[in-house]
Image (cartoon, rainbow, N blue to C red):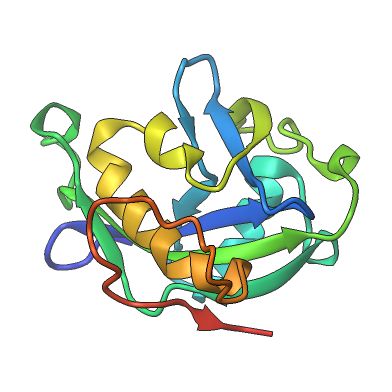
Length: 178
């Protein structure tokens, strides 16, 4: 679903474990790491898309996770010019994303990357909370930074030692959902 400004609507998924680490996944047959994410279809709600993408990309269903929070607004990034498909109509110039924070309540063995016919990832690992900012492709870094800063107070329960180490100020906080 591409809006009138050329942005594709998308859900992003942050899965955390008991150690407050984040699941980072490696793109299929690439040396590129990112968090699970995917488009919102025309007939879907954000939550419908979240659970569909969760199952398609990492093999988890709603019973495997607890929904903790979401970003309260769309976060946008522009695609580099060389990634824009000019022949595709409508033209997509970037993505707008709403991000969800989930806590894995089942075992790691429920994470499967090949449960769907279109495999997105071929490896995954648990990483420290801020690591995805360093690992993701350059043009997504600002969105990852903003999203992680917004979700940190929920995950770290407003502890004084929230590990916010990034350069830009916090612009908004996530909406707690439980």
